[in-house]
Image 1 (cartoon, rainbow, N blue to C red):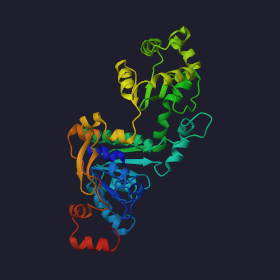
Image 2 (image 1 turned 90 degrees about the vertical axis):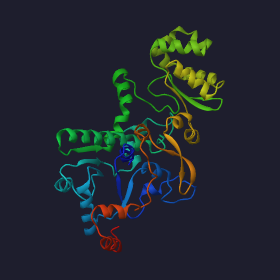
Image 3 (image 1 turned 180 degrees about the vertical axis):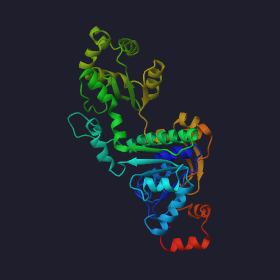
Image 4 (image 1 turned 30 degrees about the horizontal axis):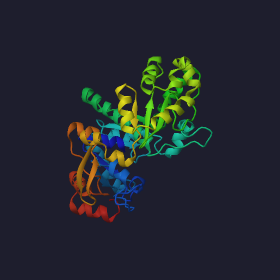
Length: 363
């Protein structure tokens, strides 16, 4: 779903074919205005922004016919492998279309996350594993879908032939273990749950500040350690020459991280992150959702744009990185079936035929 939002940001006309009954994404909170409403879910408002909504039941004979006509007009089709039409049927209708098939997309997120090995890595040591929040992994796997689809579109432009892209969601999950696999292969060290502390790079994690938390990841090189000590000026750490060795920092990492946490409490997030970045250390404030919605950088770059929502008034709207880059307008997420009539008009259905489709429960 995020993949097709990215395509919408690029300026493509994206039609979301959805059930006439609200799906789980529309029902997923939190909700704008604070009241449950399948038009106001935050995930729906973000992921479906810039799209058109076509509410259709393609399981009926009439619905299948409508869907086939829509397929005939499409340049790109993104669908799960359990769709109404088979790949062969779609190819027979529209041989030049780019067809992106999502495999294993019907599994619950927690099952895919667990099977891929990710759940074994997230959480605090000695305690129950913890699932990452925000459905972030699905948003990340959507990047594979968007990139694969875009590559197929470029290939078709060169070859003139339609392409089929298969994206296995389970395999996408598994790619996020690359650091853990690399660390075990190179050093024979299994990755363990470390909570707010880094599991692969020993001197990394989240630390307290005066006004919240911040993140630091210090590279394994000795010169990076020396640079950090010149800044931190901790007499215990800086005076221990053995800590110049990576292996020794691994052994004493919890003691080191404890001292970094105690030292950082004297600074605000902005102070410590700004200085860390000036030293080329990967560092960032741990933003709350509210802080992110008011982030000066996102506003200055145009990612967040102040708009007038027809229902919720003046608000910050996540326009998106690509829409900002191309200066494309991003419309609010559509109401369920909002674009039915215009799409049916485009497909050549008369008003009388549309009434019949409605009466039969197809739209």
